[in-house]
Image (cartoon, rainbow, N blue to C red; front, side, top):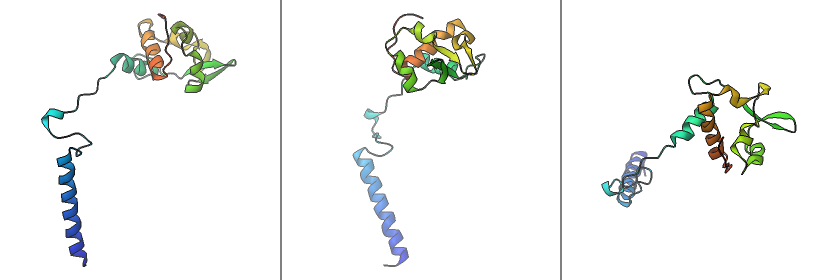
Amino acid sequence: MNHKRLLILSAIMAALLSQALYASGRSSGGFSNRSDQTPKPRQIDEAYEYGKAIFLGRNPGTKAMKYCLLVDGEAKIINRNNIKRYKGTNQSELANALYDCDEPENLALRAVNKEQIPYVLYYLNKRYKLNLHGAS
């Protein structure tokens, strides 16, 4: 077979495969193009996103800082391993354990507006699946 015939044959095979995927409903990322099966829009948890923005310092008027936990008397950046010790505890216990990594003598949530603290705790609770209880 020469090169030109091979190209034509591969184009035909691609077209046939495309039609087969379209007919089976597997085109466009697994969603059918039929109107009765339109994908539902993703629901956004606005409280989570707001808490995340505050935590990451992306919210206007919020100080950008690194949050740490005191582990054996030393400030460590939050990660799954060191925050899991707060699983199932009170929100206030976690709030009192969060420090500013750059200034470990200062509680991190003191730099946040009081109205924003519940959002940060909600974000951490949901992000790390802590199952926190109690009001902050």
